[in-house]
Image (cartoon, rainbow, N blue to C red; front, side):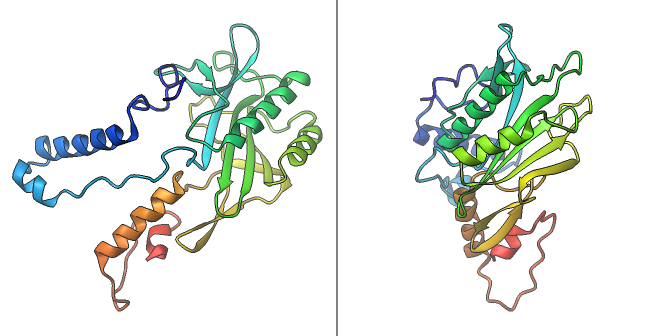
Length: 257
């Protein structure tokens, strides 16, 4: 199991085996249907489908947002918030994300320390770098790096770009996102492209999608494909129906049909 799970505020049930996690989630849905939905036990035994799990429940997340703060020792910490706090637990090796995400974090952390870039402080609303945002197109292998700033410019940005693109040729987009508001919302409304393209692409159920820092996209691509195909099987569409994809966002469920 993950060595961070008791400190990190991300995974609440990572100490369980994956089989136990699926059983826990199945029972949670079943109990809610009993208690809130008014279904009977025998009825649920008849209608509830088994939980659909993953073949590989690790390294699947294609997006990560990392708060960046200075710790009590004055050193930069990049990772995840501890439960019910804004104290950062440094973590460059989360088991749910591609391993190269951690390598990118370490490179950026070294850059920030070397050039003494100021780090955001929530209490004073001072400091520049608030979060780091990474996104990966699993099918294209394109990677996006976005720094969320309490400002509009990153000092020595050209050096960081050179280091990142040399070490990670798959990086197709490096961007800055400006968020100067006193808020817990991570991303601000404006992005500036420093290198490459404004979007990266991926393929979901045979459909090419373009992803910006502000795009919503399923973080578990393989899991989404599996569930979309099950929904399509349940729908049993012949090709003659009028299909309405309501509250659809970019429409990946409807398009996958």
